[in-house]
Length: 293
Image (tube, rainbow, N blue to C red; front, top):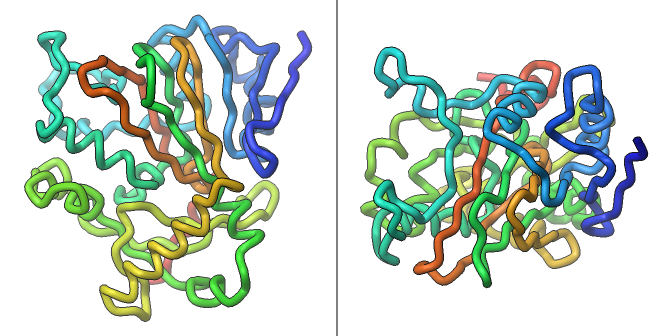
């Protein structure tokens, strides 16, 4: 078996060929995948024959599976793979102003998943299940590449500072009503170092998200202005890869070093992506991003 890679962007990300993900185990192929993940931050595997069981098995190799509904499940209920979808239980699509659609629209803001959780996310493994004829891309932006090329005059304003995150903040930017829902307010605010150093290769990345709302040493308005300025710098076209989905595509990325967002599509068209996030562990360098009390 020959593993080949093709760059997705000159600064980060590779398409990987020569691997059937359903065959990956801890000892077979995963060490190579993990090495590519650490080096390139984003990996694309096109048109995989990849079941839900395969999805869960691959995720467990990266670390503990994130389960945001664990505290809401009834006895005997098991984990089900989260879906990024505009399709309801009855098979129809949500209306454009439905709160569920507005929640999808909040994913159009540049973010890293789970910065608002007590334990943040290492990776998101996203799979195309139902795709649209237009729109509906997923875009990635490397905060590692952007940080390496960022002017020192901008770096000095954020380096060494803590950034506060809350789930409701990103939702309120789309709809005040959305931001008040209990699901977006059940975790207290978190505070992380603005820079996450990769423990394997020592490369630094800016750690921000649409959930970020306050920077140590700045007032609220100054904080939001700085977060917006940093996000704008990191999401310049030079640092962005945009993926148009086909059924079976598997796209995964390093949440410590990559922002992502969805893009709009005709809402009458169904779209479903399966998404599993895995939580960071001490081996992933979570100590590098914790802030002293």
